[in-house]
Length: 259
Image (cartoon, rainbow, N blue to C red; front, side, top):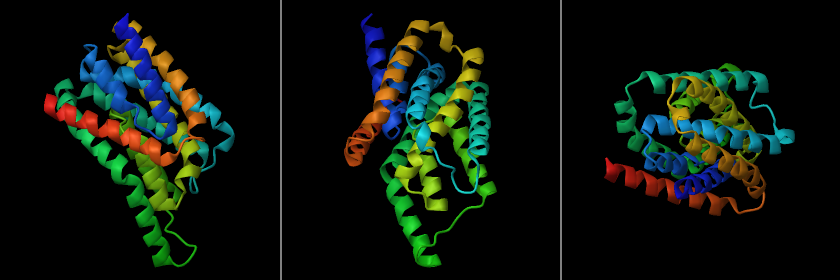
């Protein structure tokens, strides 16, 4: 029972972080591994559990969704769904030992994105604006946007750490999209790619062998996703990013020491 209660609490934290700015994987994955799950099963379980929270966050932002670049919302979402499913398939097909060995490096990569993704995006966007003239920015074609989204979605289906930061970075660099304006669509696309990945994990992974842990994480993530979307409008963004980054750095260091 204490273990289930802890997983429930971790689910709330992970759902809140994902709704606010990303980083739920940094707490969900280590917590599930600590319960005795293998890294692959833990990653699949966290993806399944965090989907309802992402859907809850997307529901809160449903009236604020806006197309990204010249692509329609339906095309972008379809691309996310296909890419997420492919990434999930790669996780299940590739040897589990390879994922276990890659986890610390994936966490490190995601941590770097969390730490430097937004500043680099702003710097590159500013540089593009200066190079092309006042008020102008480099704009990717709709096809390029969809290709980039597909690659991000594959990564999200395979691992998922900081995938939202990757989306915002691409949109900011390639389209000059403000991160605050892109946040509602970020949450919606994370929900889409995780939904397709979770559907595959439900039928092809071992996630359902521990239903109590999965349900506890799921319920917590729903609570966190719904409340986190509201908190994102009230709490200082810098404080929230600092908290997420602190968790990311801690988990990355611990995983390297564990390895």
